[in-house]
Length: 383
Image (cartoon, rainbow, N blue to C red; front, side, top):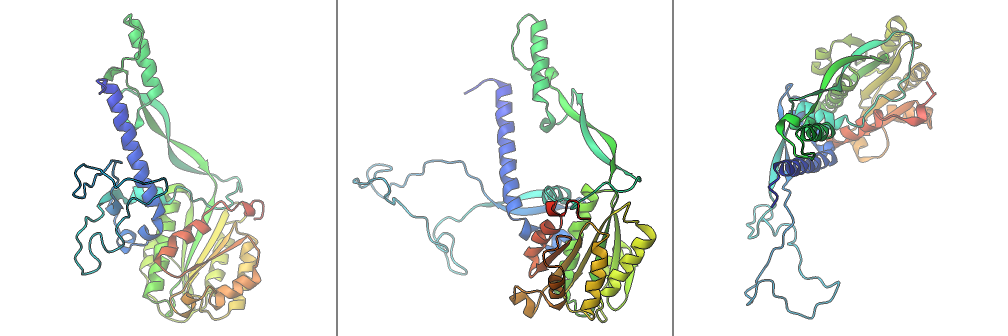
Protein backbone atom coordinates (compact mmCIF):
# COMPACT_ATOMS: atom_id res chain seq x y z
CA UNK A 1 0.00 0.00 0.00
CA UNK A 2 1.34 3.42 -0.92
CA UNK A 3 2.47 5.69 1.91
CA UNK A 4 2.64 8.72 -0.37
CA UNK A 5 -0.08 10.99 1.01
CA UNK A 6 -0.11 13.02 -2.21
CA UNK A 7 -0.67 9.84 -4.23
CA UNK A 8 -3.53 8.83 -1.94
CA UNK A 9 -5.01 12.31 -2.33
CA UNK A 10 -4.88 12.01 -6.12
CA UNK A 11 -6.51 8.59 -6.03
CA UNK A 12 -9.31 9.88 -3.83
CA UNK A 13 -9.82 12.86 -6.14
CA UNK A 14 -9.91 10.60 -9.22
CA UNK A 15 -12.42 8.30 -7.52
CA UNK A 16 -14.57 11.27 -6.51
CA UNK A 17 -14.53 12.68 -10.04
CA UNK A 18 -15.32 9.28 -11.54
CA UNK A 19 -18.23 8.84 -9.13
CA UNK A 20 -19.57 12.32 -9.93
CA UNK A 21 -19.33 11.59 -13.66
CA UNK A 22 -21.29 8.35 -13.21
CA UNK A 23 -23.97 10.18 -11.23
CA UNK A 24 -24.06 12.90 -13.89
CA UNK A 25 -24.51 10.31 -16.65
CA UNK A 26 -27.43 8.68 -14.81
CA UNK A 27 -29.13 12.02 -14.20
CA UNK A 28 -28.67 13.20 -17.81
CA UNK A 29 -30.08 9.94 -19.16
CA UNK A 30 -33.25 10.50 -17.10
CA UNK A 31 -33.70 14.25 -17.53
CA UNK A 32 -37.05 13.82 -19.28
CA UNK A 33 -38.56 12.27 -16.17
CA UNK A 34 -36.70 14.42 -13.64
CA UNK A 35 -37.47 17.91 -14.93
CA UNK A 36 -41.19 17.16 -15.32
CA UNK A 37 -41.70 16.68 -11.56
CA UNK A 38 -44.05 19.30 -10.16
CA UNK A 39 -42.06 19.70 -6.93
CA UNK A 40 -39.05 20.81 -9.02
CA UNK A 41 -41.03 23.23 -11.17
CA UNK A 42 -42.46 24.88 -8.03
CA UNK A 43 -39.19 24.71 -6.05
CA UNK A 44 -37.71 27.78 -4.42
CA UNK A 45 -34.29 29.15 -5.32
CA UNK A 46 -31.56 27.05 -3.67
CA UNK A 47 -33.87 24.16 -2.78
CA UNK A 48 -32.22 20.73 -2.64
CA UNK A 49 -33.62 18.19 -5.10
CA UNK A 50 -33.26 14.49 -4.24
CA UNK A 51 -32.92 12.10 -7.18
CA UNK A 52 -32.94 8.30 -6.58
CA UNK A 53 -29.98 6.59 -8.24
CA UNK A 54 -29.19 2.90 -8.32
CA UNK A 55 -26.23 2.06 -6.09
CA UNK A 56 -22.81 1.74 -7.73
CA UNK A 57 -20.98 -1.36 -6.50
CA UNK A 58 -17.33 -2.19 -7.00
CA UNK A 59 -16.82 -5.42 -8.98
CA UNK A 60 -16.14 -8.45 -6.79
CA UNK A 61 -16.32 -12.24 -6.96
CA UNK A 62 -19.32 -13.70 -5.17
CA UNK A 63 -19.22 -17.39 -4.28
CA UNK A 64 -22.19 -19.67 -3.81
CA UNK A 65 -21.18 -22.95 -2.17
CA UNK A 66 -24.63 -24.48 -2.83
CA UNK A 67 -23.95 -27.00 -0.07
CA UNK A 68 -20.88 -28.31 -1.89
CA UNK A 69 -17.65 -29.29 -0.17
CA UNK A 70 -15.63 -26.39 -1.60
CA UNK A 71 -16.52 -22.74 -2.15
CA UNK A 72 -17.00 -21.98 -5.86
CA UNK A 73 -16.99 -25.64 -6.84
CA UNK A 74 -18.64 -26.42 -10.18
CA UNK A 75 -19.98 -29.61 -11.72
CA UNK A 76 -17.21 -29.82 -14.30
CA UNK A 77 -17.45 -30.42 -18.04
CA UNK A 78 -18.22 -26.80 -18.89
CA UNK A 79 -17.08 -25.16 -22.11
CA UNK A 80 -16.98 -21.58 -23.41
CA UNK A 81 -20.43 -20.17 -24.02
CA UNK A 82 -22.23 -22.26 -21.37
CA UNK A 83 -24.66 -20.37 -19.11
CA UNK A 84 -23.44 -20.82 -15.54
CA UNK A 85 -26.19 -18.86 -13.80
CA UNK A 86 -29.18 -16.60 -14.35
CA UNK A 87 -30.34 -13.44 -12.62
CA UNK A 88 -33.73 -13.67 -10.89
CA UNK A 89 -36.68 -12.68 -13.05
CA UNK A 90 -38.58 -9.45 -12.39
CA UNK A 91 -40.58 -9.77 -9.24
CA UNK A 92 -38.40 -12.53 -7.72
CA UNK A 93 -35.80 -10.25 -6.19
CA UNK A 94 -37.87 -8.27 -3.72
CA UNK A 95 -41.43 -9.41 -4.24
CA UNK A 96 -43.89 -8.47 -6.94
CA UNK A 97 -46.54 -5.92 -5.94
CA UNK A 98 -47.98 -7.07 -2.62
CA UNK A 99 -46.29 -10.48 -2.82
CA UNK A 100 -43.39 -11.27 -0.50
CA UNK A 101 -39.95 -12.01 -1.97
CA UNK A 102 -37.02 -13.93 -0.56
CA UNK A 103 -34.07 -12.39 -2.44
CA UNK A 104 -32.25 -9.12 -1.83
CA UNK A 105 -33.48 -6.06 -3.67
CA UNK A 106 -31.55 -3.39 -5.56
CA UNK A 107 -30.02 -0.62 -3.46
CA UNK A 108 -30.86 2.97 -4.36
CA UNK A 109 -29.54 6.14 -2.82
CA UNK A 110 -30.60 9.76 -3.30
CA UNK A 111 -28.27 12.18 -5.07
CA UNK A 112 -28.81 15.70 -3.76
CA UNK A 113 -28.56 18.64 -6.15
CA UNK A 114 -29.60 22.24 -5.90
CA UNK A 115 -31.96 23.63 -8.53
CA UNK A 116 -28.98 25.57 -9.91
CA UNK A 117 -26.84 22.40 -10.26
CA UNK A 118 -29.69 20.54 -11.95
CA UNK A 119 -30.25 23.51 -14.27
CA UNK A 120 -26.58 23.45 -15.30
CA UNK A 121 -27.00 19.80 -16.38
CA UNK A 122 -30.24 20.52 -18.23
CA UNK A 123 -28.84 23.51 -20.12
CA UNK A 124 -25.38 22.16 -20.87
CA UNK A 125 -26.08 21.55 -24.58
CA UNK A 126 -28.86 24.10 -25.19
CA UNK A 127 -28.41 27.28 -27.26
CA UNK A 128 -30.47 30.04 -28.80
CA UNK A 129 -30.57 28.96 -32.46
CA UNK A 130 -28.99 31.06 -35.20
CA UNK A 131 -27.89 33.85 -32.85
CA UNK A 132 -26.39 36.62 -34.99
CA UNK A 133 -24.56 39.93 -34.59
CA UNK A 134 -27.19 42.55 -35.23
CA UNK A 135 -27.02 46.32 -34.86
CA UNK A 136 -24.46 48.36 -32.98
CA UNK A 137 -26.02 48.10 -29.53
CA UNK A 138 -24.36 45.56 -27.24
CA UNK A 139 -25.32 44.50 -23.73
CA UNK A 140 -22.77 43.62 -21.07
CA UNK A 141 -23.19 40.21 -19.46
CA UNK A 142 -21.23 38.99 -16.43
CA UNK A 143 -19.32 35.69 -16.51
CA UNK A 144 -16.60 34.00 -14.43
CA UNK A 145 -13.10 33.86 -15.93
CA UNK A 146 -10.56 31.46 -14.37
CA UNK A 147 -7.54 33.69 -14.96
CA UNK A 148 -5.94 33.96 -11.50
CA UNK A 149 -3.95 31.64 -9.26
CA UNK A 150 -4.06 31.52 -5.48
CA UNK A 151 -2.35 29.57 -2.67
CA UNK A 152 -5.75 28.83 -1.17
CA UNK A 153 -8.84 27.31 -2.73
CA UNK A 154 -11.07 24.29 -3.03
CA UNK A 155 -9.70 20.91 -4.10
CA UNK A 156 -11.68 20.79 -7.33
CA UNK A 157 -9.88 23.96 -8.51
CA UNK A 158 -6.38 22.59 -7.85
CA UNK A 159 -3.99 23.49 -10.67
CA UNK A 160 -1.87 20.33 -10.87
CA UNK A 161 0.67 21.65 -13.37
CA UNK A 162 1.47 24.79 -11.36
CA UNK A 163 1.52 22.75 -8.14
CA UNK A 164 4.11 20.35 -9.56
CA UNK A 165 6.25 23.22 -10.87
CA UNK A 166 6.17 24.98 -7.50
CA UNK A 167 7.13 21.75 -5.74
CA UNK A 168 10.02 21.10 -8.12
CA UNK A 169 11.36 24.67 -7.78
CA UNK A 170 11.22 24.51 -3.96
CA UNK A 171 12.91 21.10 -3.86
CA UNK A 172 15.63 22.40 -6.19
CA UNK A 173 16.26 25.40 -3.94
CA UNK A 174 16.64 23.01 -1.01
CA UNK A 175 19.23 21.02 -2.94
CA UNK A 176 17.15 17.87 -3.49
CA UNK A 177 15.39 18.13 -6.86
CA UNK A 178 12.25 16.00 -7.00
CA UNK A 179 8.48 16.01 -6.87
CA UNK A 180 7.88 15.90 -3.12
CA UNK A 181 4.77 18.05 -2.66
CA UNK A 182 3.89 20.04 0.45
CA UNK A 183 0.84 22.09 1.25
CA UNK A 184 2.77 25.30 0.59
CA UNK A 185 3.31 24.19 -3.05
CA UNK A 186 -0.36 23.88 -3.93
CA UNK A 187 -1.82 26.38 -6.35
CA UNK A 188 -5.53 26.83 -7.08
CA UNK A 189 -7.31 28.41 -10.01
CA UNK A 190 -9.53 31.32 -9.00
CA UNK A 191 -11.93 33.36 -11.07
CA UNK A 192 -12.65 37.00 -11.66
CA UNK A 193 -15.96 38.42 -12.77
CA UNK A 194 -15.55 40.04 -16.16
CA UNK A 195 -17.93 41.60 -18.62
CA UNK A 196 -18.31 40.71 -22.26
CA UNK A 197 -20.58 41.90 -25.04
CA UNK A 198 -23.66 39.78 -25.67
CA UNK A 199 -25.81 39.78 -28.76
CA UNK A 200 -29.21 41.42 -28.46
CA UNK A 201 -31.99 38.83 -28.15
CA UNK A 202 -35.67 39.01 -27.29
CA UNK A 203 -37.86 35.97 -26.65
CA UNK A 204 -41.65 36.16 -26.88
CA UNK A 205 -43.29 33.69 -24.47
CA UNK A 206 -46.90 33.37 -25.62
CA UNK A 207 -49.38 31.19 -23.76
CA UNK A 208 -52.91 30.03 -24.58
CA UNK A 209 -55.10 30.75 -21.51
CA UNK A 210 -58.47 29.90 -23.09
CA UNK A 211 -61.06 27.70 -21.42
CA UNK A 212 -60.04 24.64 -23.44
CA UNK A 213 -56.65 24.58 -21.72
CA UNK A 214 -57.26 22.11 -18.90
CA UNK A 215 -55.16 21.45 -15.81
CA UNK A 216 -52.73 19.18 -17.66
CA UNK A 217 -52.25 21.59 -20.57
CA UNK A 218 -51.70 24.52 -18.21
CA UNK A 219 -49.14 22.56 -16.18
CA UNK A 220 -47.17 21.50 -19.26
CA UNK A 221 -47.18 25.08 -20.55
CA UNK A 222 -45.90 26.42 -17.22
CA UNK A 223 -43.33 23.63 -16.98
CA UNK A 224 -41.83 24.36 -20.41
CA UNK A 225 -41.67 28.10 -19.83
CA UNK A 226 -40.24 27.57 -16.31
CA UNK A 227 -37.22 25.75 -17.76
CA UNK A 228 -36.97 28.12 -20.74
CA UNK A 229 -36.82 31.07 -18.35
CA UNK A 230 -34.09 29.46 -16.24
CA UNK A 231 -32.16 28.59 -19.40
CA UNK A 232 -32.24 32.19 -20.64
CA UNK A 233 -31.31 33.66 -17.26
CA UNK A 234 -28.38 31.26 -16.88
CA UNK A 235 -26.87 31.33 -20.40
CA UNK A 236 -28.26 34.57 -21.88
CA UNK A 237 -28.59 36.81 -18.84
CA UNK A 238 -29.17 39.95 -20.89
CA UNK A 239 -31.85 38.52 -23.18
CA UNK A 240 -35.20 40.26 -22.86
CA UNK A 241 -38.43 38.30 -22.43
CA UNK A 242 -41.89 39.50 -23.40
CA UNK A 243 -44.75 37.59 -21.71
CA UNK A 244 -48.07 37.42 -23.59
CA UNK A 245 -51.27 35.60 -22.56
CA UNK A 246 -54.13 35.10 -24.97
CA UNK A 247 -57.72 33.81 -25.20
CA UNK A 248 -59.84 35.93 -27.56
CA UNK A 249 -57.74 38.93 -26.51
CA UNK A 250 -53.99 39.16 -25.98
CA UNK A 251 -52.26 40.98 -23.14
CA UNK A 252 -48.64 41.70 -22.30
CA UNK A 253 -48.17 40.72 -18.64
CA UNK A 254 -45.36 40.40 -16.12
CA UNK A 255 -43.68 37.11 -15.20
CA UNK A 256 -45.83 36.50 -12.11
CA UNK A 257 -49.13 37.00 -13.96
CA UNK A 258 -47.90 34.86 -16.86
CA UNK A 259 -47.40 31.81 -14.63
CA UNK A 260 -50.34 32.32 -12.27
CA UNK A 261 -53.17 33.39 -14.61
CA UNK A 262 -56.09 30.94 -14.83
CA UNK A 263 -57.74 29.67 -18.01
CA UNK A 264 -61.07 30.95 -19.37
CA UNK A 265 -62.74 32.30 -22.51
CA UNK A 266 -62.56 31.41 -26.19
CA UNK A 267 -59.50 30.84 -28.36
CA UNK A 268 -58.07 33.22 -30.96
CA UNK A 269 -54.29 32.83 -31.07
CA UNK A 270 -53.93 35.29 -33.94
CA UNK A 271 -54.33 38.05 -31.34
CA UNK A 272 -51.13 36.92 -29.60
CA UNK A 273 -49.19 37.15 -32.87
CA UNK A 274 -50.67 40.58 -33.64
CA UNK A 275 -49.60 41.89 -30.22
CA UNK A 276 -46.10 40.41 -30.65
CA UNK A 277 -45.73 42.17 -33.99
CA UNK A 278 -46.86 45.49 -32.49
CA UNK A 279 -44.27 45.12 -29.73
CA UNK A 280 -41.57 44.33 -32.30
CA UNK A 281 -42.54 47.40 -34.35
CA UNK A 282 -42.30 49.71 -31.35
CA UNK A 283 -39.44 48.25 -29.27
CA UNK A 284 -37.37 45.66 -31.15
CA UNK A 285 -36.03 46.63 -34.55
CA UNK A 286 -35.32 43.32 -36.38
CA UNK A 287 -32.09 44.82 -37.76
CA UNK A 288 -30.80 45.19 -34.20
CA UNK A 289 -32.41 42.27 -32.37
CA UNK A 290 -32.45 38.48 -32.59
CA UNK A 291 -36.16 37.61 -32.28
CA UNK A 292 -37.64 34.31 -31.05
CA UNK A 293 -41.48 34.04 -30.78
CA UNK A 294 -42.81 30.90 -29.00
CA UNK A 295 -46.49 29.99 -28.65
CA UNK A 296 -47.98 27.08 -26.69
CA UNK A 297 -51.59 25.99 -27.24
CA UNK A 298 -53.82 22.92 -27.32
CA UNK A 299 -54.37 23.44 -31.07
CA UNK A 300 -58.06 24.37 -30.92
CA UNK A 301 -58.38 27.84 -32.38
CA UNK A 302 -60.70 30.15 -34.31
CA UNK A 303 -59.05 31.45 -37.48
CA UNK A 304 -56.20 29.04 -38.28
CA UNK A 305 -55.60 30.66 -41.68
CA UNK A 306 -55.17 34.06 -40.02
CA UNK A 307 -52.52 32.56 -37.69
CA UNK A 308 -50.69 31.10 -40.70
CA UNK A 309 -50.64 34.50 -42.45
CA UNK A 310 -49.27 36.20 -39.33
CA UNK A 311 -46.60 33.55 -38.79
CA UNK A 312 -45.50 34.02 -42.41
CA UNK A 313 -44.85 37.66 -41.55
CA UNK A 314 -43.06 36.72 -38.32
CA UNK A 315 -40.64 34.23 -39.89
CA UNK A 316 -39.37 36.98 -42.20
CA UNK A 317 -38.10 39.01 -39.23
CA UNK A 318 -37.36 36.25 -36.68
CA UNK A 319 -34.42 33.91 -36.15
CA UNK A 320 -36.89 31.09 -35.54
CA UNK A 321 -40.60 30.80 -34.72
CA UNK A 322 -41.62 28.03 -32.30
CA UNK A 323 -45.01 26.40 -31.84
CA UNK A 324 -45.72 23.83 -29.14
CA UNK A 325 -48.94 21.81 -29.05
CA UNK A 326 -50.12 20.08 -25.89
CA UNK A 327 -52.35 17.05 -26.50
CA UNK A 328 -54.47 15.53 -23.73
CA UNK A 329 -57.46 14.11 -25.59
CA UNK A 330 -58.02 12.25 -28.87
CA UNK A 331 -54.95 13.92 -30.41
CA UNK A 332 -52.67 12.40 -27.76
CA UNK A 333 -53.44 8.99 -29.30
CA UNK A 334 -52.49 10.18 -32.77
CA UNK A 335 -49.13 11.19 -34.25
CA UNK A 336 -50.94 14.07 -35.98
CA UNK A 337 -51.22 17.62 -34.69
CA UNK A 338 -54.56 19.22 -33.81
CA UNK A 339 -56.07 21.62 -36.42
CA UNK A 340 -53.78 24.62 -35.74
CA UNK A 341 -50.64 22.48 -35.84
CA UNK A 342 -51.82 20.81 -39.04
CA UNK A 343 -52.30 24.23 -40.64
CA UNK A 344 -48.69 25.12 -39.76
CA UNK A 345 -47.42 21.79 -41.11
CA UNK A 346 -49.12 22.31 -44.45
CA UNK A 347 -48.05 25.95 -44.79
CA UNK A 348 -44.42 25.57 -43.67
CA UNK A 349 -43.48 22.10 -44.85
CA UNK A 350 -39.68 21.95 -45.07
CA UNK A 351 -39.24 25.54 -43.80
CA UNK A 352 -36.40 25.50 -41.24
CA UNK A 353 -37.50 28.85 -39.82
CA UNK A 354 -40.45 27.35 -37.94
CA UNK A 355 -40.07 24.59 -35.36
CA UNK A 356 -43.11 22.51 -34.34
CA UNK A 357 -43.28 20.19 -31.32
CA UNK A 358 -46.06 18.05 -29.90
CA UNK A 359 -46.23 17.22 -26.18
CA UNK A 360 -48.36 14.24 -25.16
CA UNK A 361 -47.07 13.75 -21.59
CA UNK A 362 -44.80 15.34 -18.99
CA UNK A 363 -41.73 13.46 -20.21
CA UNK A 364 -42.00 15.24 -23.60
CA UNK A 365 -41.05 18.63 -22.08
CA UNK A 366 -37.32 17.82 -22.22
CA UNK A 367 -37.33 16.71 -25.91
CA UNK A 368 -39.27 19.89 -26.71
CA UNK A 369 -36.62 22.04 -25.02
CA UNK A 370 -33.88 20.22 -26.94
CA UNK A 371 -35.67 20.63 -30.26
CA UNK A 372 -36.29 24.35 -29.81
CA UNK A 373 -32.93 25.27 -28.33
CA UNK A 374 -30.35 23.55 -30.51
CA UNK A 375 -28.01 25.43 -32.80
CA UNK A 376 -30.05 24.47 -35.90
CA UNK A 377 -27.20 24.71 -38.45
CA UNK A 378 -29.78 24.59 -41.24
CA UNK A 379 -30.88 28.07 -40.15
CA UNK A 380 -27.49 29.75 -40.67
CA UNK A 381 -27.95 32.73 -42.93
CA UNK A 382 -31.74 32.27 -43.20
CA UNK A 383 -32.94 35.02 -40.92
